[in-house]
Image 1 (tube, rainbow, N blue to C red):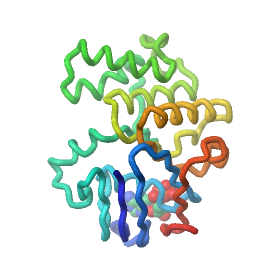
Image 2 (cartoon, rainbow, N blue to C red; image 1 turned 90 degrees about the horizontal axis):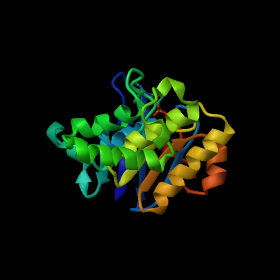
Image 3 (cartoon, rainbow, N blue to C red; image 1 turned 60 degrees about the vertical axis):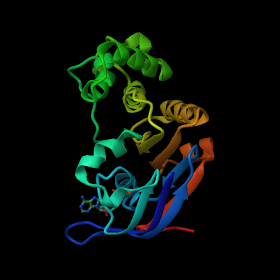
Length: 217
Ligand code: ADP
């Protein structure tokens, strides 16, 4: 499903974030990208969804060479993915329901179909009772669950999360962990970038470790 071969990424300005990285992730796997801050974890996730392009090497997702995709093909690639990224902020002037509905509206879903999917997604993350609430009234853990509902509302095959427990205390982090496990158990491929050791211990996932942009043994 995901296959990287000899992937290097040098940012404009010359910083080499990834050096000759290769691995595969099969459909249905739960995989962690680990490593200290600056190791290249976020860069790796961005390559999978064509937010960044590799300088060399190949990034293949569902048989498509992501690094070579034309810009107009990128939205089709992204339909495969749900993204829980730190820079994808919630809209604090819209309620919980509308935050989750927005990606479906943009994708052109009808109102009735969208509402059904939004409620299904909110149900999965346990936020149905807050559908009319504003995000600011939710706890940090609930806000993160809302981000996850927004990421899975279009039922992606692959869920990518970048430090999803970064700002959460241990109980909330455990809660988020269980959610990722539940999506994985129904067949979603889950890839999580983190340096959170408790998350690792809890989920016992496949681990892809990075150090200074290289695969660590
Ligand atoms: P991690 O997620 O493991 O903390 P990143 O992939 O965010 O690592 O970053 C790897 C390295 O690449 C860091 O040294 C970072 O400063 C650098 N980097 C990340 N994004 C950019 C960018 N857009 N331009 C230049 N350098 C970047």
